[in-house]
Image (cartoon, rainbow, N blue to C red; front, side, top):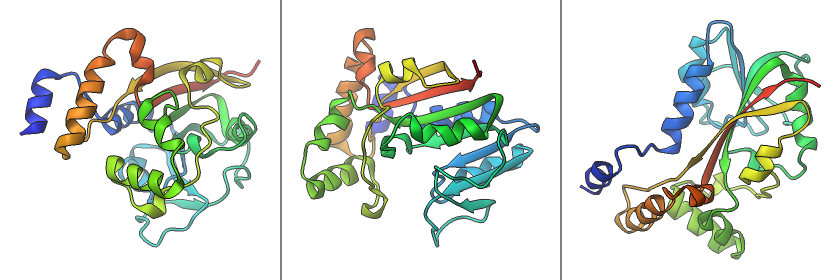
Amino acid sequence: MIDQIFRKYNPEYKHRWEVYNTILKDSISKDTIWLDIGCGKNEHVAELGKNAKKAMGIDILDDNNRVNAPFLQSDLRNIPLPSGYANLITLRMVVEHLEKVPEDFSEIRRLLAHEGKLIILTTNSLSPVIFLPRILPHRLKSWVIQKIFSVDSHEIFPTYHRFNTPHKMAKGFPEMTLQKIEYLEIVPLDKPLMALIFGFWYNLTKISVLKHFRSNLLSVFQKIPA
């Protein structure tokens, strides 16, 4: 019922995964060599990898529940693949966990071919939803994140938000040019109280000056060496 009411008055609303998946699908072709870094259970490579020339998930952790798809266990900072290997790299809910930016992007720049594309989906540290939990004690913060975003406690890692504002993304980093940025909000339509609060915030952020305070950022960069 809440879902139907909200979407009736906000037909343009799309969940962050809807927007991300649309951009990702549009970026994959039969010539694409794609690395999904921080792939988690690797479900995206399993689902969409067949549309690419090559596709591989990369994660520092091994997961017994990972789906059956090409996978490489490796640290982001030292991936054993040749330079210029990929023409598409995705970082899905990864950037907020990087402590040293832009140093942590150096391996990504190395792996990307000329004019390769980097898609980032991450949290926006300007958003009250993201900013306020950061100042809470860890246990309370974990509880809030679990309730709002429906994630398990073992999936909550330390966050630093070194690159997580529209301004920092607009500045970019060496050899990478920002092509596109979208401001996304999560409205948990399966939780009535949360849906009311986040639905109100979503509508408030339709005001152009406030859209920069939505909880998620989706950006697309292209590698164009100087």
